Image (cartoon, rainbow, N blue to C red; front, side, top):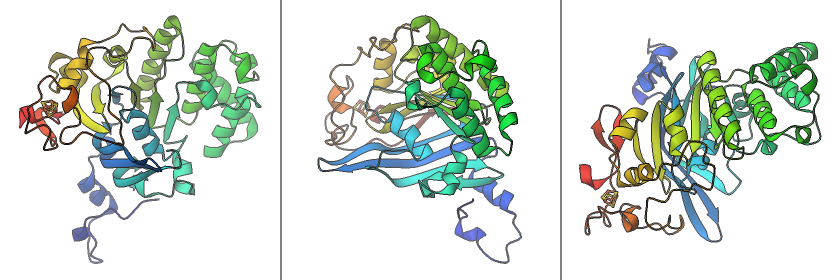
Length: 356
Ligand code: SF4
């Protein structure tokens, strides 16, 4: 289903411009997903929490984007917003989530979150793997039953063919004895095997975009390295775009082409990965990189290079929300005005008054 995204100049009934030309005017063909000025807020008795607050980024086909930042910075809510699976208190209040899908551009932000259109996209065009595989699987059914159900939901195949595809994808993600383990219940598998089964289910319909939310946090060091290696090889083999959400900058350096750093619901820096590690601009990014944990170091290696803690998202500091923790804080500037996106190099933008 396409939404009415055409600028007014294209809406004339006499227009000879094709749908494809109109879409190209809005979004480059090689961009798979364009998130523009996205704001997702949570409404509760405590007030309004601006979990995601004016975030913009593009991801190209076949690209790996890392989204990094401390806990509570809005990384996971950004991903949930794309799939329209935020908890009930969360609402998209502004922005667009434009997806190239079936030769059209669909604004996911405008779809009914329980409607047919988004259900057709979830699990097919866009899939997600979570930190804890138990989030994805029901304990009451075998992994095979659940993977087959996803395949049959999105692909027009019979039970036998779906089972054979499920065995093939389980084999591809390195599940030992896939013909037997397809009939295993999730609780009967080890943590690493459950992780592989979850990746198999996410990839079973060949999505254009896979979102992995802290995919290696819940498994031990050896399995972490194997899962990262697996995700990278599958991403290349399937030419799939991948969004990796993590607090671990070592995972970003290992895996990603591009990085977006988030702080308190804002995208504070966005750059190609090599450029960000060589030439970080935002003081928050500099702090993150000073505390890069070792790859595979696990959840205990939290970010320690930045003083203070993330303030409550209910009571945001005025101006730049990082100013109470920033070593480069400029009184009268940083606490007065919110910095805009500033381009500081090719494909490199930052929100900081130092670069105005
Ligand atoms: Fe620090 Fe000011 Fe830049 Fe914010 S705008 S990161 S407070 S220098």
